[in-house]
Image (cartoon, rainbow, N blue to C red):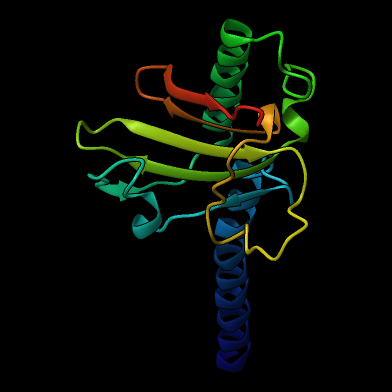
Length: 162
């Protein structure tokens, strides 16, 4: 009888452990399902000094927050569309490769920095871990900062054409 009870306890503990171990992975999958292989998150303060010199810390977005970022991004494209743009539009924005950084600034606002480009780099570049800095290239290259706390955007920069 005591052996039976011990076996039941062990099985119960194993089931609880297995369930607990898989929950964070499933939660991360749900939160990040909007991020694809065309996206990367770079949380390296040394690479972000030129963007914000007072990063308090980094944060991970939820699915709802990523959807809000997309909505603000679409608004920025609509409000700033230029007739010289040949690639960037509401319809094509999802096709861009993107480098993200999600950080809290000195005002305790949630900021999302996006650096985007219309194709995977052809030259040697570790774009998944290092921010790309491209001169010219037109609307194939752009960046924006989104203040998720204030539901606004700033520093929307589309490269020029040489």
